[in-house]
Length: 133
Image (cartoon, rainbow, N blue to C red):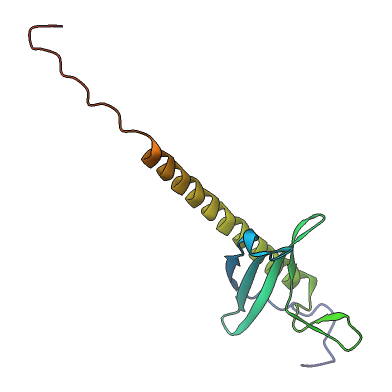
């Protein structure tokens, strides 16, 4: 990478981000983790073990990290520019929203099917005599 870039030089173009999100079942005792995600950037760089966490201000993205000797956590990989961070986090949170909507709709359909199965079948409609109306 050149260190003597000229002012007004063309900015790097935004790379495409492909995201897969795997929601976590809350009954597993997962704490604040809502989902795990993986992302492929530009079709050539993959990041796994991204987490969607539940925070005070709503869901946020936590990049893969490692615990240092000082007890603090340090990100292993992360977007360097604000634009790429916004694109990556936006794609992950957007896919998380879609995944949770799908599971909530699927859950509602499963519940409705269970309720319908538990309900007694309606009595067969009695056909009227041909002469009576």
